[in-house]
Length: 315
Image 1 (cartoon, rainbow, N blue to C red):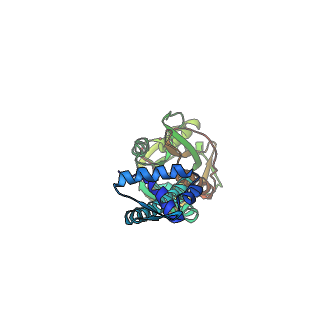
Image 2 (image 1 turned 45 degrees about the horizontal axis):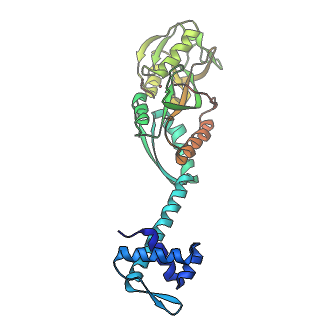
Image 3 (image 1 turned 180 degrees about the vertical axis):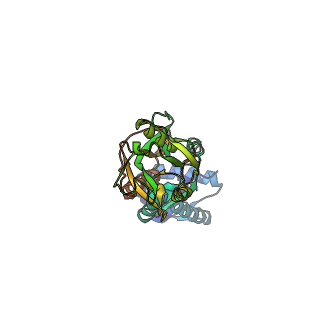
């Protein structure tokens, strides 16, 4: 089998016209170059250099091998450049899992920012309603990152969790409701109201229930919609009030009134999960940075912080 490194030595000899010239370029001794050529001739089974005066002339076999050595050198240079781009985060391929309401306000601006700064990075986006499916994909290496709503106190030792933003819930009231004229609503003032459910069981619903418990009551759900748009429709029809996260509110129904909630303010936590043991991936670091920068541009009332936590179906 031909040794690729010895082919590069032959290439240097042919280009410089002598063993001595090649030795100078390569930083070898002339005898070391001659030994490499002699070994390559044994591998090739033919003479490669013909002595002419103080120089050498390549045989047809040497010319052939030199052409292939040129091609190999170009391929190695291309590989080195591609590797440098990958290690610098200029290229790469990422698989990202996200839930619906994070798409427009977090994922879309982050992807747009990344494509502007690093057009060589490709992102495979997949909408996942169940956070357990998303986390399984991350753990098994099928996804590089998952966006999810997390629940405080949940250990996830095999995952790295990055807090992106807190998404506050807003009170959605029928137009003409007794509290509609207030600039904000205290959560305990909704204690006796029928509620329209807007969440699937899981961290999002828990955020509402925990806040209501802190305010001294458990909401009575008259209707369950588990969909933010449908929930607004039920509220507009006068079937109850609802709590909807700011990211999920979209364009409010014309027959509802939306007010901030305080004392306490129900809030869900949105984080990015990556595999703790994953090797360094500059493209992923660039995307996470884009997510951080996208978080403050989400609807007002959210602020990014740094903390770690750990993720029912999410909207």
